Length: 216
Image (cartoon, rainbow, N blue to C red; front, side, top):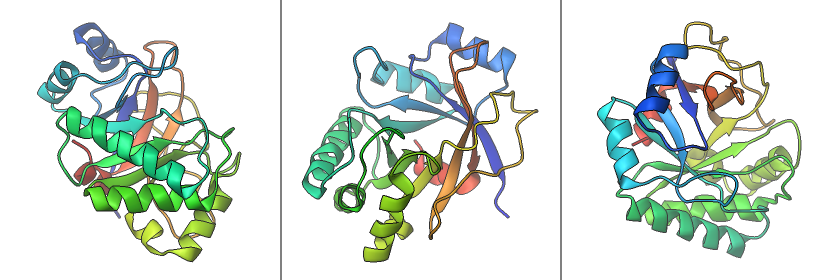
């Protein structure tokens, strides 16, 4: 049974003050989810300086790509994946790191897009990941259809489940690892179990330690 490791993600950039808030209120995260590029009024994008700061604290970076408004169509997925790869390379992220598409539960999603994201990233030598809601919205059905059509989707894809949401906690008070999953073969290696903490502006996560191999 793989060990479970605690971490956080945030829309805001990580500086000394923010890091101290998280460390003092919650514990020391093993990884920190941040966005590859800016999305206006949603999230600030990673910078090379921020990457150096986060890594200097012994924390790995979990890269998220969220400049998408729906996840429909193979060609559209290729464009999104190529953009994610462009930003990953611009920031100096090495090959074999997972890039997580942020697929919100109100998005339209189809199997072609999921397959396109996986296949395009595979060719670019990055690993594919999906932040998703397995209970609400179209993701689970589309993902299982994609797996049925191409087993490589299940082999390559790393899923980051947003359900169930049990509330943000410190590392010590984290729940037992029990993310909701699609009803088919899937590497559900991350679980965002707590959102929008009032103490510091973060979400809290648990991960299967295998995912650390694909974080920077």
